Amino acid sequence: MKNKFVFLLLIILIFYSCAPKPVTPETEPEIELTEEVLPNHTITFVAAGDNLFHDSLINSFNINGTYDFSPIYSEVKSIITNADLAFINQETVMAGTSFGYSGYPLFNTPQSLARTLADTGFDIVNIANNHAMDRGRNGLYATLDLLDTIEEFTVIGARKEGESARIIKKNNITLGFLSYTYGLNGIPLPRDNPNLVSVINREKMALEINALRPLCDFLIVSMHWGGEYLLQPDRDQTSLAQFLAEHNVDLIIGHHPHVLQRVETITLQNGRKTLCYYSLGNFASHQRERERIIGALMVLTFNKSAREPFEFFISDVGMIPVVTHYDRGFRNTKLYPLYMYTDELVDTHGLRYAGAGLTMNFFYTVMERLNTKIIMYNPFIK
Image (cartoon, rainbow, N blue to C red):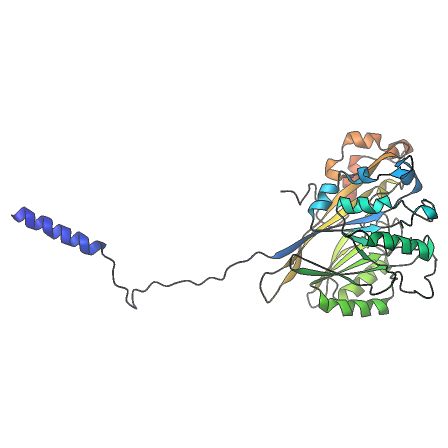
């Protein structure tokens, strides 16, 4: 009997110990409220320098009057197509056969190049450069008409009529673009269309920048500037870069020197920053000096916070070096990311036969003066 009583008592104790306890103000658990962390809105962005088609480059891809330039870009295509947006400075007009194809000094490139650039992944095509008027008003009009037929393109720096600014909205971020050139090789703009190409003029630039600035999250200005073949930016470039920074430009894309120049972050007294790529060098070209066959793709990411108050910043800044390869006699022209270029390719480069002192070590030496991260892989393929 005693054992039964003890057993019953144990059952009662177990039951009450397992029963839920009443919640009182003293025992009510604290609930920690945390704000959901959302990822930033982002745009990955690349930019290429001078796409400069000399007559030898045109002629080497002439097959019975047909021009297919796609092999030039096959090794860099995966970088460009996998970025959200891609920019190129198209240095030469594509006015059509009636103007005659030619290289330096008055360029005109076959119109098939335009479709190739779109298929390679380029979205923003800059026309404001010193060769924009090589074939006069009609040649530039024909080029703009051609580019207008390609849905993928946003053209900056030249227009037949209308506004010069362009706005692109993507991934909940708004980018504003303007573009200017130092000159047009002495060829005047039409009197009845003096705004056909945007030329550097600080007073006008300030008006255009100030008008566009409130309409975009990031403001990008393309600048065709500087002295040809100078390895460092000149005073005009650094002065203009400071001017653009003071007008709240976020990114400056520089080209024209045909060689690589350094990257710089300009910081104002109020802490605001402007990122400046002074020169991206050549992209495709048949220039014949070793500094002119090593260019770069600019790489970065635009960021916008997911919630108000919005924060805006640029990250993942760097360069992917790109080598323009051609064999002896300017055959088999192709762009290679430096991370894909080899000693074997160096040995067959046309410049080796010209005694240019071309080596892989030379390319690495160039990288040391650029003041930015050098990217030796495709950052857009995980």
